[in-house]
Image 1 (tube, rainbow, N blue to C red):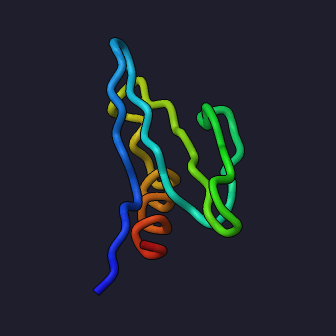
Image 2 (cartoon, rainbow, N blue to C red):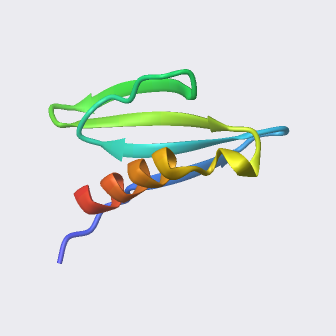
Length: 69
């Protein structure tokens, strides 16, 4: 069985970065960085400053990343 990570959490002093491994780049104000790391894989950094930023859009991205892993 092969497994790979789908997300990473990188705490900072007043916020955290959630890194999502997807097969596409994400776009929008909350995306701090999107980087293509291989032919079919992107690392997308989502900046989170408050608990209420955990919304349906973010849960959808997490689900998508988990499904690809």
